[in-house]
Each structure stands twice: as C-alpha cells, then as structure tokens.
Image (cartoon, rainbow, N blue to C red):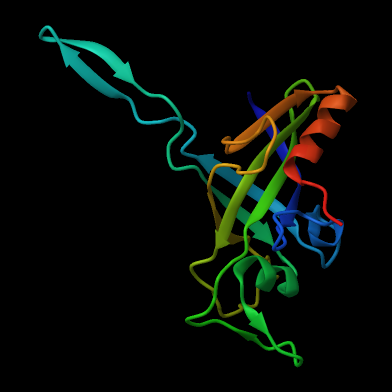
Length: 194
C-alpha cells in the first residue's frame, strides 16, 4: 500500500471509564491555528523472525504477533492546550503548564486519514497508547522568511482492551470507498462515550 499525503488525524483521549466522549476528540487537519499533520511513520508492525533449529537445520520460523508498535509524528502548530492534554501536563488557572514528577500522559486512540494511489480513502487506527515528546526547540531567527518546522511526537501503542472484534489488536487499516467500512473504522477507533 502506497499512501499519498497525510490529510488529517483525529486524537481521542480516553476518560476514566475507558470511553472517548466526543468532547475528547480533536481533529488536526490544517485549519489555521488548529495544527496540521506533516508526517507519520508507524513501526514495529512485524515481530522479529526467530529461527528454531531442529535436525541440524533451521526447521521453523517463529514470528507470530507484532513488534513494539509505535508511531512517530511530525505535527505543525499543534494547539498548546491539546499538546498539554495529550502529554499529561498540569495547567493552572493562568494557563501555565507544569511538567514534573507527576506528569503522566493519558491513554489516547488515533485515526489517521490519507489516500492510496488510486484515490481511495486509506485509514489507519492505533487503538490505544500514550504520546511523548522528548524536546522543545528554540532557534534564532535570521533575515530569511520564517518557515516553521514540524515538531516530533512519539506514540507508544499497547493492545486494545475494549470488548469487540478489535480486542487484543493494536492497529487496524482500511483502504477503499465503502461508507460502511469507513464508519466502522471510526466507531472502532473511538468507543462512544456520554
């Protein structure tokens, strides 16, 4: 599957009951001052192959499951309040954010949207995981026109623990134009909340 572009990403933040209410869903799609998607690389989709030897030969290859699934994102101009929510920063009434020993990101789900070479919708969901961001960069300006660069975020995935056909899975993908399948992907990605 060759994907063309990275149209948008929806981030859903789980509540304490394991649901993702509509109020906890945030769409990043290139609207002014609301952030834009630049890049995504999902890794760990395959388990490393391990050869099992018997009768003096490589008799069997063990490779069931996935590796350590994670996604590295380049996001441009992510709103600070969303950045703080997905990274677990504490924010006071003055909108000052704090990072420290009690910083703990919430569990999130992701739905990424692109298209394939034929123009069909391509969707990827990572059911559950947490965001991290290793650095905040400050750079001097020059006399050249300023061109912002994407900030790097890493999303570490775990298996879905919600009941249903996606239980125990980490990633789902769909490529096509069937509206029922597109709706099913959205529903699986974001379990309904109150």
